[in-house]
Length: 247
Image 1 (tube, helix red, strand yellow):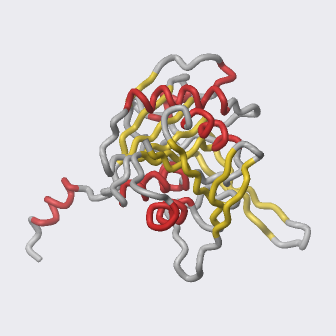
Image 2 (cartoon, helix red, strand yellow):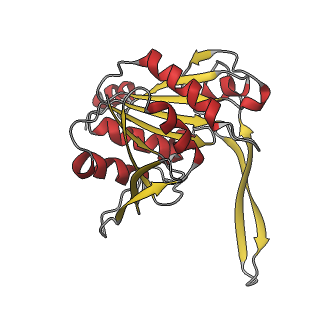
């Protein structure tokens, strides 16, 4: 199996190295990832200038292609230029922090997986809930166990996997749940920088609670979450209602 591995924390991120170590046990892995952190890049792509791409040694463990671009750039470039032969599976992660709820829309990790869906590549995003000590090695083991249960993943499908904080012990299990549509209790902190300018730092509290089990609530309770995503953002029910209007 030919696996494309990418992320949004940068090619030298420990989460990428941890999942690479597990993925090579089940297939041939090609790494194409951003040269630096792209968290919050969402589905941005680079088109006004060429992409700089270099092959690099990653901490003496393996080599990969470092791209000065977004996670979506990495997937497009890999599929069209860098990867030899068909890609059987795309894995994005392991991300430093959960990508659940509305974070899915901001996430470069999920965007990379979604770009794979656009290109008809089976894709999985993997993330680990953030805490002071991130146990990527154990998260990678859980992630690949879940991945093997999911196989085969259909072309164009996107599965979003989130692993809870592991300092609290083993996950309580696996929940297949929808993405929460609730947001954060967000606010900006007004500050002054060294130049005397007024600046605003975004901050916030955890996700608002849901009435039913979702990815955000299940993560907090200690479950690994599995959520199927789609690239089609159409509200099909509303579309049918709109068709009834006499335009």
